[in-house]
Length: 98
Image (tube, rainbow, N blue to C red; front, side, top):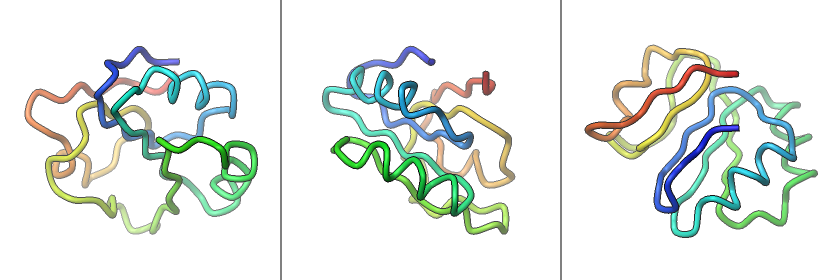
């Protein structure tokens, strides 16, 4: 999985495995991880990782938008979205999905 700083605000636009998500969440002491994906994938991941309090799982609206505030995320990983630049903070890192 990706390496992050403890306070990063991470956006994943690709569904990780539960083990990958747990590993990422463990790196985020004060940060948060938001995973956006298809309905069934999010439901499955939600069941497997409901105990993680620094992870949010949201449904992809399917229209290319990311339902989040401007300039929030410090790290993004996954497939490209036309709305990605809007939600990234200045000097954010954008990583290719693995």
